[in-house]
Amino acid sequence: MLVELAENLLVEDIKHSIELIRHLKAQKIECAIDDFGTGYPSLTYLKNILASVLKIDRSFVTNIDKSKGSIAIASTIISLAKALNMKVLAEGVETKEELDCLKMLGCYDYQGFYLSRPMPFEDFITLLA
Image (cartoon, rainbow, N blue to C red):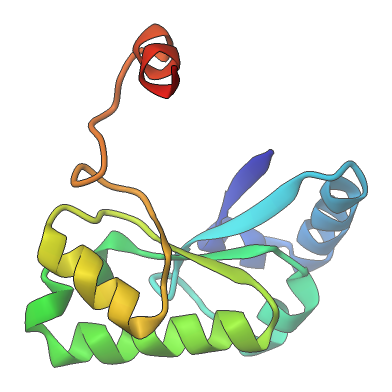
């Protein structure tokens, strides 16, 4: 199971956030930091939070194949996640070009309309079968 926690909420009460994530990890629940880099990122809190996943915000993914700035930011987030032994997930992937660019940068987990539109649970079960 994976629980997503918005970056800006984590930094509001860092001590409580650390306790919450430790508790969830003890229950075998992974935590993802959502919207990473869009709020108040702090490398100090990042090393103490102990989350399992960093999510690359869609604002850095949209048209990443056409933006050197977005490539630089996504590449940095991917490198940071790997160095901290975290998974990295890109959200908002809507084109094959974005997907290919992320793969080239070393990101292999994605969310977005290119992969699937939202669907009712019953349709999801049918898709898996």
